[in-house]
Image (cartoon, rainbow, N blue to C red; front, side, top):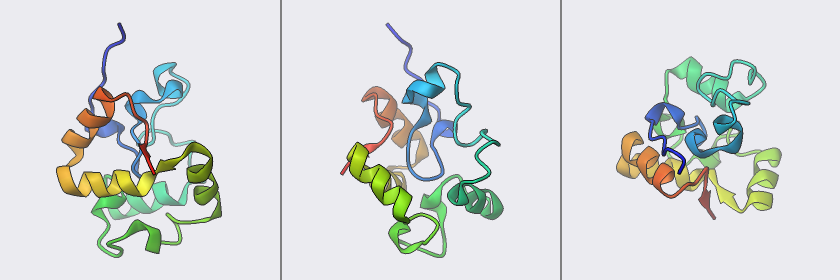
Length: 115
């Protein structure tokens, strides 16, 4: 049986959980926080510049969908194809915190919450 990885440092900037991602488990991705190759990601850059762990910490937008960096065409397509909701992840982080979010996602083997 595979070990469950519960680590708040594996919460992505946009509300996903890298600890249950296939690429992360196969060591083909370092996870959002450490993946310096993802310099193209505006969400990642914004969070790093502002010292946030994720968009849940944003002081400018209470709803991440109001942010143009977070809510864009590519993100919308991603959510439709994978029937996922990064926003639901951000809302859950705000509600229960990073540790409990990581625990919930790991125990339920989820990368993202469903929309």
